[in-house]
Image (cartoon, rainbow over all chains, first blue to last red; front, top):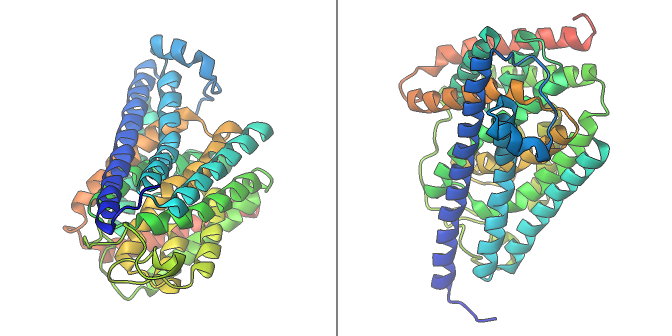
Length: 126
Length: 275
């Protein structure tokens, strides 16, 4: 592994902040856009938010989206929103690793492991 | 259609209030959905978790670009808030809803009392930009690498423990957990308040999304209820952040305290099985 000067590390880390901020902003706006489109379709269809929505079925999502069903857009928006923080951590992990900061890259990887544990436990118990 | 619009408007109101008073929306979304729209408490908590991720997502990006949030400290602490959130998310499905209502009313009373006792009347607005160290270790040891250029970080152990508690509280009650994280970072770890607020906001995404995955996969999140509420809260938070320096929050704070106490009373009735 090459040794980087403090200035090189600083420049890389400063770039990392910008990348992380972009991921957060892009993910949030994309999710809100999808959810808002779903809400408009809900209003057009006269769908009440108190009705039970069809459960999440990833395989049916493309068909729901193509058919313009509100649940399809809402589920996709939800998935994008929930995946955005984990994507931010993955980008941080990569960035810390490139900056030669193994400890922080390891911690970011552990955060991803904890999230994955939650997903696995949620799936197993669901 | 009318219910969806009412939920949207309710979300906007919650977003504006939360943003003006520097609180996450979670504290008000759960009462809005349970007391206003009669959603089951656990489902309301799931919706609230999604809403706090939405509101923190956009603002966390701004705090990072302004270099207020401490990315390194946030990453270390959010490992432990995420662990707490996994436990909390699993516990939420084991506890009776009346227990959750009791815990939520205790939280509301705590916040109401804190607001009444608050000596400062200034809103907790957007933190002033300062140069924080997210760059690399300065000094010796792991904890030195978490410090900023003008502030050290102390007592990592209690900070990590507080983060686990914040994660559990977030997952059980559908809040961002800033009520725990900010005091822990500021008062226990010695981090300046503006950095603690921004870093807590950055951490909300991981804290809330970890348990939100559990809620979603266990069928605890209904997208029809999430849609209007999340969009409303997002719009409301955007309006609130623009109004923050134009509104006298003293009267608002009193009104908010009254709303919290009334909501706590309703939640206690629910916990006691009277509703």
